[in-house]
Image 1: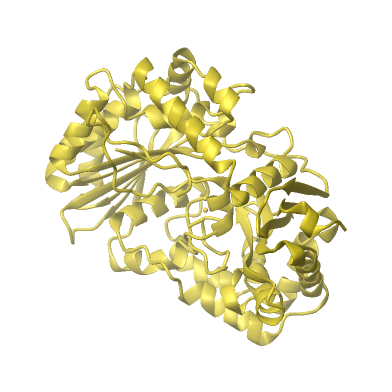
Image 2 (image 1 turned 135 degrees about the horizontal axis):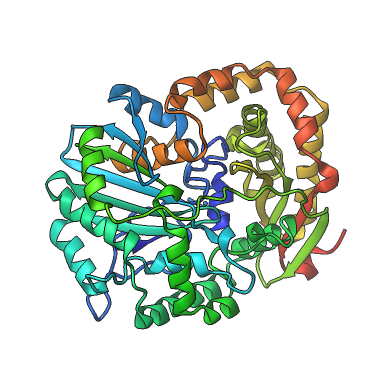
Length: 493
């Protein structure tokens, strides 16, 4: 069993779940998209969970676009089906008979935005512990069952949702579903496992405190979302994790892990009707609970400011950013086209051309508008030598001003639209990736025909649209600037 939770840095660096932040980066879902890693075993023979939640820089560097990359697999196969089970859980299936495998992805409203003040990290620790003991099986027995049937099982937690993923052979689906249902309905949170996982989380927190990119990202989030759960680390702090208790974990599990708060996506060698029958049997005792509250709607964001963090580094890590647009906003697609031209298009973007190619100031520079359902954020991220940090920041601001004031060319627009509609570095070529995509489509309420409609959303964008959204959603007067590096060498402006 494996645990994966994307950091905000990962999530924001690759931008929104659509993958429309074109920085040569790859896509992960808006909250998390667990990757199956090769697990190692501890002295008890239990598979160890990876300590780091960094899957949201492979949520800027791991996933450009879900949408078009999936269009081919979905169109080539059976059209997905959707239904709502009697317990309130939404079921999505795509029947793919090429391999005798079934991939399952569950999203549930149990993310860190539900953590109470002083209990930061509760949702994350709950997700970590799902596979470490149920009423029927110990952690070791769960590992042995997965080992015996050759299945993978992973859990993750993000800001809005938690997830549980499984890939299993069709012939072992009954056993796999039985275990999947067990961890969702009867996890027991043994004290010895709680103690181990708390120490693992704390070790990961301490390790990230030494990573300049993480330091910059955490301070940017806290400044953009003051007083909001979205401004806090999903894993909590060392102090808050130390205070988490078994009683609180069990209470959160009982309240949040309910079927009417869940989306279940299944892709593979099984029909919608077969899966419905199997789920009704496996989850026959899972009862409805408190309905989902949905993402928080924010009314205020942090003001413009400059945040400096001194660290002995040879190069500075810099973030410039502010509020963006939510995934449901009608200007979302125009913003993504505009951002591709500004800094999302890798070597074809303006910021890469001016800051790296012309001036040689940075090896890495990119921008993205990442979006969750009700909120979004803009970031321009770069690394440069301490001595050239101020110059790089000034050029970045000039590029923001230029795209606001000067129309983009027809060539730039055409290149951006062609890329966004037709060429991506990562294809959704496995059932597991398709299952994750379908769950996200449901979460964002895009409709199962979204891959077919997406190209038209991009093609209809005009130069006037790009100019309009640049003026409206790039706001230099609201920039939050975070600089992590040797402040003596960087100087102040």
